Image (cartoon, rainbow, N blue to C red; front, side, top):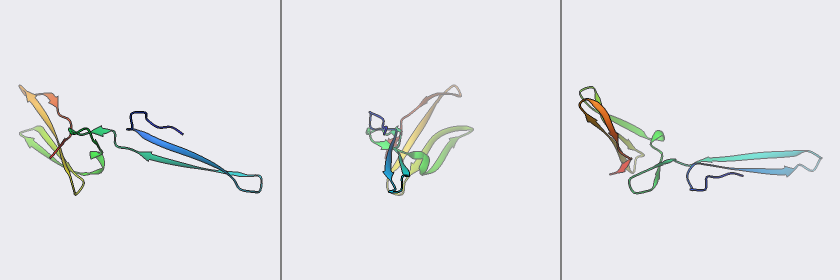
Length: 92
């Protein structure tokens, strides 16, 4: 069995059972835990959510992600037309 000690990442468990006839079966259970942390310190998985992109001219300025209950926003900052900053996912 493996897990990320920080509590975020991928956890898996392996069970091994005898079938009673000299053979064995194994079952693997894997659980993908969101690896993104929002502005409140909580795990969030925006990749699995509906996302809306916002632009100013040709520049992507923000991404809004929603799971149907909560909304998170990641903001992009530009200086002289060049990307200079990317925020954490901020819970709205």
